[in-house]
Length: 104
Image 1 (cartoon, one colour):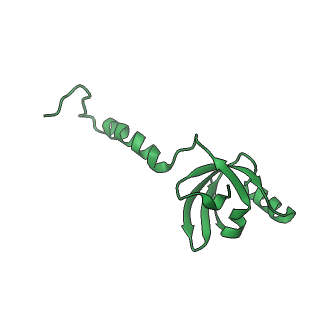
Image 2 (image 1 turned 45 degrees about the vertical axis):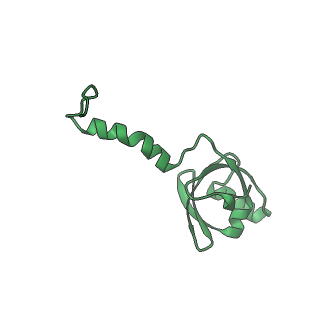
Image 3 (image 1 turned 90 degrees about the vertical axis):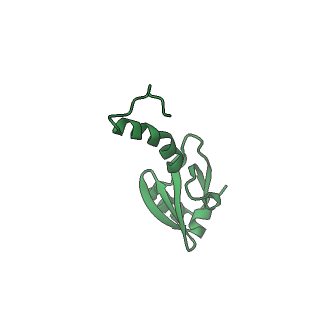
């Protein structure tokens, strides 16, 4: 599926770039190579804001349509990660927290 089909916050891996020689080389230089990790961070007026290998880019929709991706089930969105980690962090940050204590 093309990169443009993903929603904000979703992650994927590049499967293939279906473009001409020049664009293919340019995207490869930016990090869009097979199996690279990509995350959609926003959509602005026809452009996609993405993070590829830790670098943030804005891509036009036409360019993004040429990047074929597959879902990355190992990559979780930031909100899912925060929901899992935040309660543990809050408990460690509070020195008076007692895991054995019962609340009334």
